Length: 276
Image (cartoon, rainbow, N blue to C red; front, side):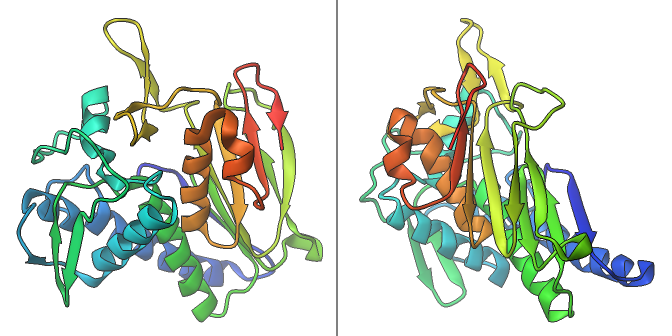
């Protein structure tokens, strides 16, 4: 899903670790096959191409769309998967043909209808970030069902920790400097929690007019969000909701404290100073 994947397990034999890795890999391959906007043959791309029609979709995609719809409603539209058109217009093009996206996104729109196994979209959607969070959620559940209680699972900047690490201590994760420095900005102890980071440290580019472009689109404007922060990291019990919260926090700009009230969070400004 466009991210390096790493699984660390505490206190088990190598052959058990190999089986655990196979379980996680299978989940991520399935999620990528169904949720990717970069593959014209994915279930999501086929659904996007059928915009306006009710078509049968596989269970994994229905689950992902249900979570995306709930996140859209819970955040009053600050999380909106319909930003795919703006994302392509900003320069991050997947090369997959898409129907036109709405020019104005309202938090009051009902852009999805579900009837049994059939789904109709009124706009094409992107499930990139939340899809990765869901793949981490599903992988975590699969590992737990297989009897694994102590592990650290990382997909790019998103991490899930369960149980304890080596020596019976909480897992310790370094918070990466979005400027690329080798030394972490701080370390965070995790136990039965997830971390998600929304950052423009890697996925940014410059338009022909010299303006900064990145992948974190503000649904209210249809343009890359004003980069008040270089990165926003949020801790939550679930990786998909941590992903949603980190994006909402990034879009909140100077209002991030209110947007993320009650959640452990860290954000980094243009001067590379850490807050949180």
